[in-house]
Length: 189
Image (spheres, rainbow, N blue to C red):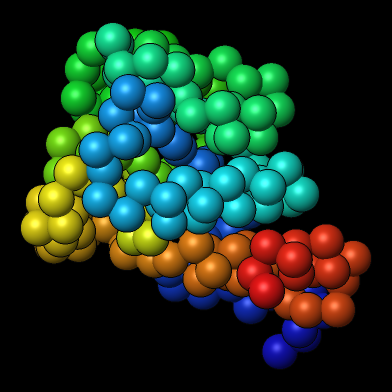
């Protein structure tokens, strides 16, 4: 096995940077104050956005109508921030979301956001028909931990892979010792 050629040893369920799309669902000013674990979620999403900027991953953000703008600490971290407004819980119920996802040609959706048991779960369960779905467990939330836990169970049972912020970062990086790894290291220390 030639470990210098990353294309020769990719197997199974590993996420690849060429196929991943980071999705931020409804991380908004009027909603986040009532979310259980909001500070932890916000920090992990901030780390994911910084990582996406370093490695060049595309990002799509949604905003549920009437819940205010995306948190400033997050929107400021997204290059060319253009959130997609929506009134549907399932992001795929919004044509502009479907169009933006299709335009990336990516087939692995990496989901973050709130509320886990509503918009995140409905989006994940819909996407599983056409996409690989990874849910970043420590970057999703609900008003109650119970609703978040039920959402994780349902998404997993439906076929979504449940992962964590650091697990995702290291999986995309693939190796240590590179300039990119050095740039990312402060995000995981």
